[in-house]
Image (cartoon, rainbow, N blue to C red):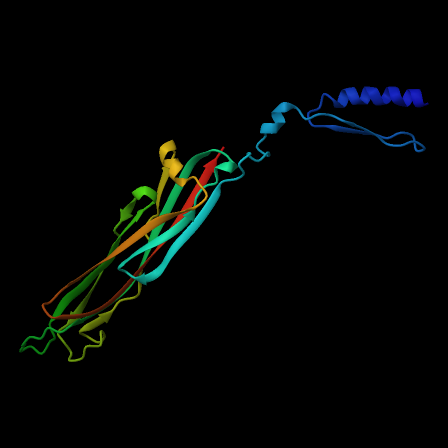
Length: 237
């Protein structure tokens, strides 16, 4: 019986060897021990999508500048890419800005009218910020300048500066979130700036832009803040 089992085992091993990645577990009779024949994986399996790249998955780092008064010049820091993990072939830099503002206007213009009907006029204000980002060695990552304008019809001054009533207005809070700016870097000389064991400084700048329109006498109370978010992604082979 042992000779017949050995012959059957050899035939089964030949069949299994034709199937990529298979392993044969051949059971001996119940009084014997299991016999395991391992079949080598074919070479092409090593490049299967299921096999992770030698440098690992793409690395992603983030930093941000929290909301603050719209006029600022601040730094963010991102770790450099460790070349021991593999060759760096692409860096994606993605950043975005955010602006929030509260606009309050009061028309203080008065006029004589015999009709007794308060005269109406339009008051408006524009708020925004010029925002930009630079990176290591002064790399320019672009700029944005989002602006929003709000307007309302009000009457001549009612005697109280409260940004309410017939001569004043307080607009709903404004939140501006412009599209993010994305840049990809593949030039070897520039990629070298992102490679090492330290940290890189990115410099964000925000300059507020505010304008008020309407009558000659307008009181305004405008509070504007801005923020910035940064994301850097390393891709390697």
